[in-house]
Image (cartoon, rainbow, N blue to C red; front, side):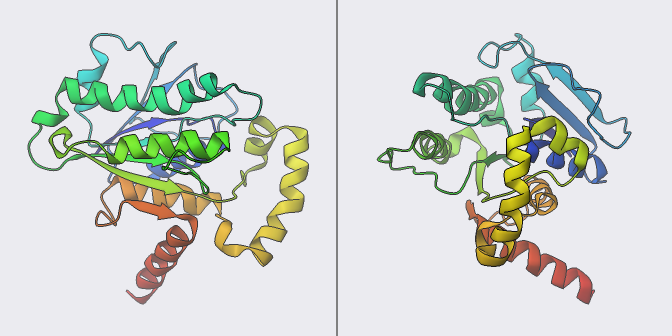
Length: 246
């Protein structure tokens, strides 16, 4: 299986990257990144990863869409906090980058592909509002992106799954130090035990997030399209129970 990844230097994306590297079913990984991957990333050694640096996620090299369309799936974890960004900036990163990718795939040939559809897994978040009525920037623009993906016509041959994780944080010390600010790390220490005990349905262990994303990209749970945090946790738990019984 050939997989495209974005957002691999983020808290969700780095764990998804690790899980994909360790999964024997995934033979090729193409990482789209805005810069070379930093040296602090603790990724298992492998010979199946190619990193493509894109200066502009709205302007692909002419040969790239056809190369991407030859993959089986993509996990889109690219994103940024909406805090401090204008609506225009957050829309460009969240909506424009994402829709440019799927539109480029269609133009490059996914709509003509026979057999299994291209699987697109979008990492959204709890609170996303596809109705567009929310006054919260994150909810409105993430929801707008979800709607655009779900509205892709069957002729696109792109099968969308949307993950809406709740609260999660990097579990590895090196990730926390490089991804989270000092203030955010302090908040994580405070919030994690609270979320795990008081609101467990809104908490997502980052390892489970990575596992779920990769399994969804492989076509598991393909009869469902939208996965709130509680549903992801339920499916992961059921999956582990079944494995333990075998």
